[in-house]
Length: 532
Image (cartoon, rainbow, N blue to C red; front, side, top):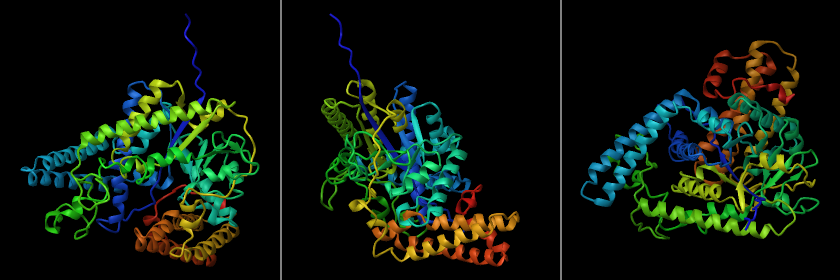
């Protein structure tokens, strides 16, 4: 009796989008918003690297896709921020040790305090000794070994549809992002992460100019395309400019990211908001929390989700890990069933599930465990689907339908509402005026060879790029850090306007230029002629 040959046709692409805005304040000894980076390193980037390294060392043939934005890479490789991150960890280790002593007569809290002391020490040692402080290189090595495809993104994560009418500015965001990718990873990017999956007509042509091959749209960006896609969202479509557009699968994404109906809301998982930084007195926290006197998250969290109540039960790590494995199995079986249904169709389907990388670990503490468990199941089974990347899928399926995608984003209500709201609309007249001015001074000085003018043009572009970050409008809209977002937007625009006036007059204030270069030290090799 001969065994039946099983042909795997289903493809599943998980895309993790890792991004943080450029936050670096050497003028302050401690700065609250720099914690965004430190928390993401400890709870997301290091756990993901260790997870992928384990799977790779075991010989499992997995494939993942990751975007690492230029601003995030710049911060990860900044020596000042690396030093401050280690100082941050030392403070947390000391706090966890104090908590261990304080909780010595409470069995559950004592065990949790010990867990956090070990967790922070392990992060410190892995970052310092194993990675030699270079998180970006660790991801790069996984790409070279074929387990990971890293894709490019816009220079400062600008929401590109709201820059319509300024193609030079859109081009600069895309081309500078691709240039930074080549410098960082030593190869050409194939895919591109549109910030917030924000798409509008014409962006595909600019992406094509940058020699990119594919990008990701939200579901309705492809489903409402003209003509309608024959295979719905289960196959990419080419745009008229020749790029492939892959659509986000909302069903699989919702199962994972939704705190209300998805896996992270399970009562057994660690609660994000209940934190020692708010439960302890200021006197107890004072030696360990900086800036002094602030209430903030420390990462020491003793409680689980429990339910919609202020009375939270204590977190049990072993229960949470077991639940993550169960949810991974549920996710795996659901996709087995979905691909079994799709197998009836006369084409090879792909399901694309993009997520913010920080969901795994930072927002959902057990997320890396879930992801590892799912990957193990998928790579060991491989009878109904295989893990792939969009680039790999396109190489095997180069012929696809041509459509015109619909303007869209993955933000609330699917269009531009998050970044164009009563709280943030005031920024756009200023950003658009600066865009016109940047194009003006770039064109007027296109043939310049004066070193000081070149430096002023580079710095003008840096300030404009940083002012355009979608994060500032998002923070204003969500009211999570509105004062900081307003301040950053105004500061970059004010510096840009001053540099613009000096460049027009050919009277560059070298002291001011040096100050700007020291504060915003991104994109050292920036090509300002993209604005011409």
